[in-house]
Length: 138
Image (cartoon, rainbow, N blue to C red):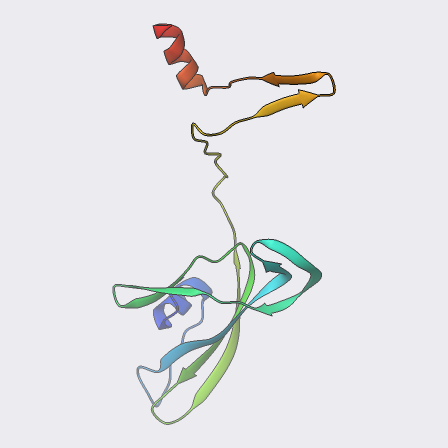
């Protein structure tokens, strides 16, 4: 999501305009995420509330783009200024949704051990494409 005037209009429907200044400035002063407290991806608190969130901004074609947000509900606090020293603050809400299904990736170093109380066993499992190739050459 771009966090400039055009991005706020495109993504959140908030138009920033001013009678005194045709080009007021906009800045995000705070971002919060609603939910549990996580440390290194592990929930450490079961209380769900608004929590300060850090975010990364990448500049793409001269425009600030927020990247790397985890799925969840967010609140941006945005300030708009004009050259007449007027200031307006607004909270904008949005939800990040992960629409990409997880994909398991394994390399040749993956070992799976199956065991029970009678002893252990060793097995190998290959993806279908590799099994078909092995059958043709084996």
